[in-house]
Amino acid sequence: MVLIDNCIDNKLHLHNTRPMIPRVLEKHLRGVAGKFPVVTITGPRQSGKTTLCRSVFAQKPYVSLEAPDVHAFAAEDPRGFLAGYPDGAVLDEVHRTPDLLSYIQTIVDARPVPGLFILTGSANFALLRSISQSLAGRTALLTLLPLSLDEVRRFPRHPSDLWEVLWKGSFPAIYDRGLDPDTWYAGYVGTYVERDVRMVLNIGDLLAFQTFLRLCAGRTSQLVNLSALGADAGITHATAKSWLSVLETGYVTWRVPPLHANLRKRLIKTPKLHFLDTGLLCYLLGIRSAQQLAYHPLRGAIFETWVASEILKARLHRGKPPNLFFFRDRKGMEVDLIVELGRMYLAVETKSSHTIAEDFFVGVRTFKELMETSPSPRRVKSYVIYGGTTTQRRTAATVLPWSAIDTGKWWKNGEA
Image (cartoon, one colour):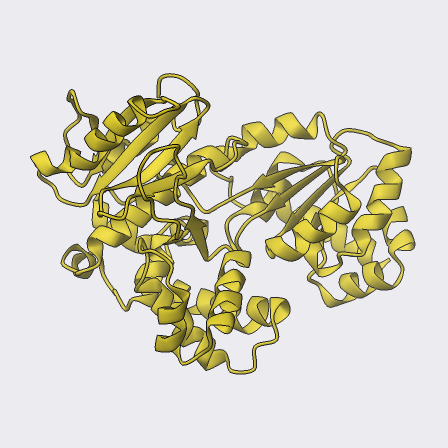
């Protein structure tokens, strides 16, 4: 009875909340829910998974498995728990009860109704491992990251200055409730370290982990050097590797692999580190205002991370695989981001400067020449995304201002 009452209260609460801004993922979510009996949405804490699911599937009961009594019921009597939802439900934080997925498998095998169960979770490694064991072939797997730039603009009060956009970051609560970013990120880091990190990995010294987290922030847009990172944090190479995996599990950081093109050149084989949200990144770096960011020595690296994350969101929120790489040879020639679209590459260079300079085009021009004359030629379309305001179509590349990044069709084969 307690569980039923909770669900009724949750439904009533849903109708009293403010309207959700449209999310790009919604279209893809509705599409796969009409084909698969289970839809699983992963993503960082507070990215909007619950709000999206409760809006799109308002007719379904909503159950949070984070509530202690609900969690205990689902863990101790999974059959009885699921029997209370013969027409399915939205099950939030399902990674907390991974054994429940085996029982969901039995239900959907007997009754493969499209969109029967909608599952959400934050700890992607634990959740993906459980899904691969129980729901392979039965669930569509989607990722909801924080707001993209075009989604931020859907709020009545949104920033229009580049550095304010990067400093505030992209978590919905900051825009929906008008919260101070510094205060909100302090709470977010505390919750993440105290709860999510401990759930994924048994870390005794949380202060050391927080130090490691901040050291990673100082290396955004750089090649991953675990030995140097571990030495600076006072931990072993193995521990640094393990802790970096924890950050990826919690959708704090992500690694972009190098492009292994079929070229007669020696290429870098080390991945590049990025953060998924520049607001969190700025907080960890001690940047407390947009003005401070505008003059910060890492502003170029932070801008590159923002561009990479925006393109990642554009792809994931439309159900596309990342297919993102970077290119660097051992002589230092580099392109910040490569988007693979079938037999075509989009080469993306990022520059935080407000003024277009000729050296912006060196990397993309060289990369295009290399790829078009390689043993396995690929067509290359080049872009330079910069901190200014003017769009230009040059021979070497299309120049896009940062504010027009959402006009690029980063997910489409052919012309982008």
